Image (cartoon, rainbow over all chains, first blue to last red; front, top):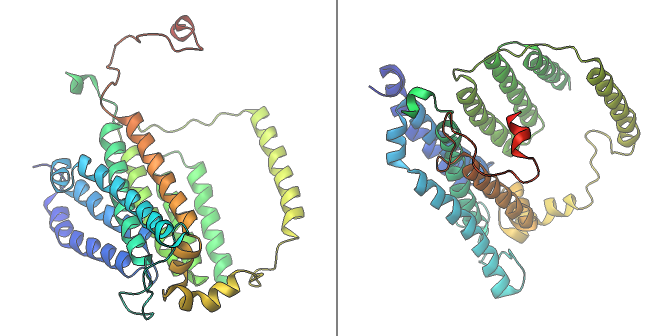
Length: 148
Length: 191
């Protein structure tokens, strides 16, 4: 049996989905309540890190592989840049808030701010998970037994 | 006001424990206590955005540090007395205190910010950007360039970590170095 004990696995199975959901809430409601893309992205990455610690490397890699994490990292950064570039094309100012602002305190309001929050959330979540994978698996110094 | 002093004393004690303890795991946990104290201070200063970010980044960095330190090579650091290093450190701390005393006289008093630019953000922010959270309207509308720069910094650091830590092209145990290293000659490395 890989991973930690049965107690840790049972608790983690219940808690992971709530952590992930709270991270999504912090990202999506970033323009209304405290939080935003960075904090919510770290919450999302913590859910995956908990999965990797409680279960095993194999289970977490099946949910979000190293390549997929790297791809999400690149796509998040690139889409934030694209949002800025669209403002530059349509109004002449880089990162201009060009969508209609709507009424404050609504979920769909504030123009491009929720979209940027979403892009940063995806980027930060995937990249911090990727750095955990890189530090805990790649960064390990192999012993002579493992080398053979 | 008293709660800030209590939390600051707690953080200073945590930092001293982190420096002075022999066990690596206790040092990491003491660093985590310092971070939690900082996040509670942010919460009392009515900055929930930064308090959330501080506490969650602290948790993640604590997990990563524990994962790195509880390997097989978890050794206690020996204390060595180096008089020259101590004297140089004391001189630089003294210089820092002198210049800090000089520089902090020009800063506005605690609790009385200047409010030159920020007052217009607070007044006009919700109307101009439509975001109810003023912090989001500042970091993603007025100062979105800085946020893009921050995202690029994170992206570049992760690229660097992947390049250095990748399994491909790693030297195996007992393998000799191939090729030269440019400035340093191979002979000097072997000696």
